[in-house]
Image 1 (tube, rainbow, N blue to C red):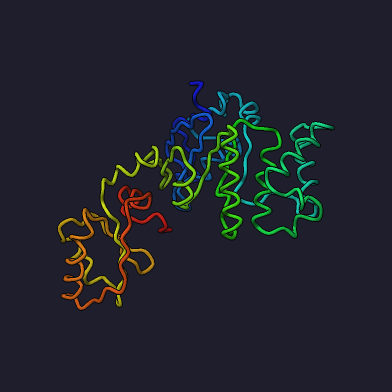
Image 2 (cartoon, rainbow, N blue to C red):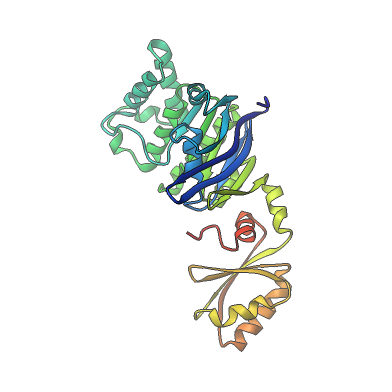
Length: 315
C-alpha cells in the first residue's frame, strides 16, 4: 500500500440476490483527509461502508485500511477503524459516560487509560456536562454525537461516518459538521457518506459520486465542477404542469439538459441571461406562465445532473 493512502478500495462488488448493490467500486483516500461518498439513497454508499468495516464480505474485490486487507487481515483492518453507523447504536438506559465505558471495555481499554479516554471523548463531543442521566433523554443530535464519541475511543487511524446528520435539527447538524472538521484538523482521516450536496462541498478534500452501485466521478470539488464547465443551473416553476413546454425548451440554443423534481424544472444552460428570455417566449406560446426562476452557479447538483440526467435529490 502507498504510505499516502489510509483507504484503498479495489473493485468492490456486492449483490443481494438479483440486486447488484455495489458494482466494482474503487477509490483511494489519502491520510489526513476528509473523503466523501456522495449519492442519493440507494446508491450503494452504506453497502460499501459495510464492506470496508467488516460487516459484509465482498463478493469480489478487496480494500486496505491503514495497509491491512479487509479480506486477509480483517482483524487488523477493523482495529484501525472507528465506525459511526447510520442508525443510532447506544444503550438508551445508560448514561453517556456509562455507554463510553462499556464500549471502551469492548475495545480493550481498562483502568486509568479508559477513564482518561472517556473524559477526553466527552470533551470532544461536547457532552461533559450531560455525561450523567439516561441517554434516552438526549436529543437526536446528542445521540449522534455520542455515537461519534464511541467510534473515537480507541483512537482509530480512520473514522467512517455513514450519514451522521440524517434526521437531526439544523443546530445539531452544524455541531456534528464542526466536530468532523475538528477531528480532521487533528490529523484524523474521515470517510464520510452523505446525500447532502452542501455537506460534501463544505467538508471534503475529495468527493466520490455514487449512483446505482457505481462510482461515476471522483475528484476535488473544483475538479468535479469542471465536468459541467461554466454552465448555469436554472430552476423554473410554472402555474400548470410544464409537459407542454418542456420539449420546446429542449430546442432552445444553449440548453443542454432538463430534469423535473417535485414540480420544479431544472435546466443546464451556457448563459442564463441569453436563455431565460427564450424560456419565457416558449412558455407564453404554450400558454404556460413561469411563476419563479432561480439561477445557480455550477455546483455538485449540476455535476450529478450532468452525469445521470436527473437531480441528486431525486429518490
